[in-house]
Length: 145
Length: 145
DNA sequence: CCAAACTGGTTTCATTTGTAACCATTGAAA
DNA sequence: TTTCAATGGTTACAAATGAAACCAGTTTGG
Image (cartoon, rainbow over all chains, first blue to last red; front, side, top):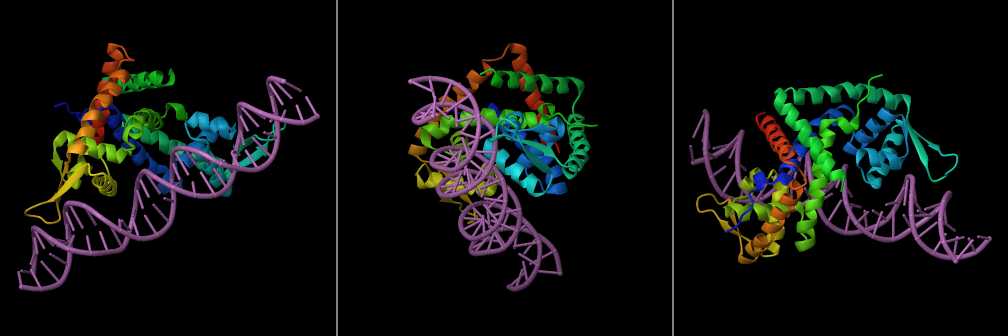
C-alpha cells in the first residue's frame, strides 16, 4: 500500500522550519514591543524604504491588504507612523515612520541582525551555502509562476 | 544609518516560501475534501502509521495539542477515524482511520506526491541537491537545541 | 495509604486571520 | 459627459489559532 511519509514531505518540512524560526524570532519583537508579525513587517518595510503606500507595503512584505491595513492602523494608534495624502490620487496614502517609530526600528535592526547571525552561526560554510542557494532556488521557482 | 533588508532576511524568506508552498498545496486537500491543515496532517499521520494517540500525533506533525484535539474531533464527526480506549491508562485513546478515512487517505497520497514531484521538477539536479541539504541542515540545527 | 505533582486530552476565551463585501476615487469607453 | 470597470484601502463576519484553565486519571514521595 502506498503511503506518504509526512516527515519527508517538502511542504510539511518547509512549513515546520519556517514556523520554528519565525516563532523564535517573533519573541524579539513581541517581547520587546508587543508587535504582531504584520506590525513588525510594516515597521521594517517603512524603516527600510522611508515612505510607502499600503499597497507597496503589501507587495514588499507579502501581506494581504487587510493585514497591512490593520497593522498600519495599529502603528498609527501608537504614533509610530503618519499618513499623508497623495496630491494626485486621493485614494492613496503615503506612510512614514514618526520619530518614535524610527527609534523603535533602529532599536530592532541590530536585534534582527543578531538573530540571523546566530542562526547562521550554527552551520559550516558548505551547509550555509546549501541553505542560501536552496532558498534562492525555491524563490525563483515560486516567483516565476 | 543601519537598515535591514527584509527581502534578504532569512526568517522572512523562509516564512514566505513555506507560506506560498503550503497555500498552494492546501488547495489539494481543501478543494477535494474541505480539510484544514491540522485535519490533513492528522489524516496523513494516521494513514502513515496506522494507530496513534493524540500526543504522538502532535509530536509527529508538530501541532499543538489543541489543534490535534480539534482535528481529531472533526475527523471523528465525519467518521473518518475511531477512538479506542487504552487498556492500562484510561486517559489515553488510540486513534485509527475507518474504512472511509483510509479511502480518503489513499486518494490523497498520490495527489500529494504529484504535488511534490511537480514542485521539484522545476529544478536542476544541483538546485535540488542544494534545497535538500539546506533544508536538512536547518532541521538539524533546529532540533538539536 | 494519601496528598501533591504530572500527564492525556478537552474546553473556554481572546486574538489573529481570510474572504467577501464595501466605500471612495480614478480611468477608460461610449 | 455619463457610465462602468478597476483600484486603494477599510470593515464585517466567520473560521482558525494560542494560552491558560480545566477535568479526568496516574504516578510519586512521604
